[in-house]
Image (tube, rainbow, N blue to C red; front, side, top):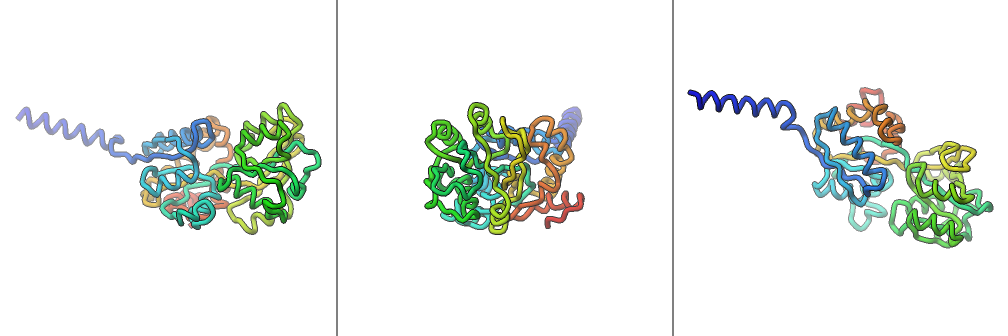
Length: 316
């Protein structure tokens, strides 16, 4: 009898532990490099999801957008942070996914924050995108997100790679080359302020060239994942006025097979706690229903769509 009572107590305790979270969902989130925004911000989001949605999120460092999309397809990750344009290439099987083919194993949770297309120069004769003709310009590594963003901007201004002296450099190499006078301008795509640009503007007479007017209109007409964006005055040293540009979005995606309840709960955990998240990471200030739901070219997960519908926005 005593053994039976002990067995019953053990079973009851196991059931109680399961009810308290032992059987909670587990997800792995692919982000980016450990020194980048994706990784740090992903860690904050993961903590709020765990604390408020009961989903145990493990945040891992990865090679970024394409790796995260491929990781979800392979079953290694269930969540990932990606650029909205790279997400569009995956969904359509174009550009950086042309060789690999279309990937449709993910769904959108929400847009998170702007990754601005920033055109930086130290040449006072460059006042518009059109002025890049004949200049030496860094447009990112071949096939990278920056490369395709730069090509889109050039095309909207009636230019091609052949109309400039194209250089294919990273953020750090671009700013070093600008300081050394080896290039005239560089495209950098990242959340503003971007440390590489801040450093350049602190020690040099560097400035941002606007991407606006007819150029911005042409970009958005041909590529719906872009939106307009204002880099506020004072974002960088010496920046006395707002600068208009276009942006893609850092976006949270999820495995299409994830349950509606889990995705609803994790979406709610993020957006119901936007103010608290902003206090921990500056990019949290851009969390809003409007930013979350605009500029997306892949479909939303039904769980996320349910949350946004409750907030008056239909993304279904």
